[in-house]
Length: 205
Image (cartoon, rainbow, N blue to C red; front, side, top):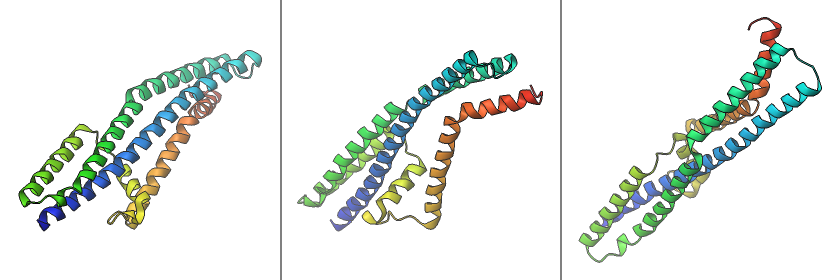
């Protein structure tokens, strides 16, 4: 009986880590959805401001105006298509549904030790394992970053959650990489404007 109880506790730890990682994945995807909506607005504002500036002031040549208008239109279309295909909101909802079901499985683990016979305990444990495996098959796998960040935020709350120095470095690098890409996306039109300006001034295209 003690072996079954120990196995149930080990399963509980796995479920807890999966639940925390899925909660982190949901948060990441919802954040991506928010950034996606803001980026579309920002790019539209960039386009509108550029058009107004050209109507009011003749600050650039016709060649520059034509090239940058095409570049901005292509960037907006590509961004819209890319973000729509990522389906952030639906994927976040899938993770949320998954970790709520994991919470239910986790609560049922405590009942395994309450069974009167070893066979009843084993049957309950096998049912929980089957439910957990089925849920893992049904839900998209979280990223390594989700798992590491979930453990990092959990800290000493759960045994075995503490990160090594290398894993902490990995977490910080992932967050820095995400911040860098967000900056590139938000400043994309400005960077494209600079590239087009330098290219035309130096007859590169």
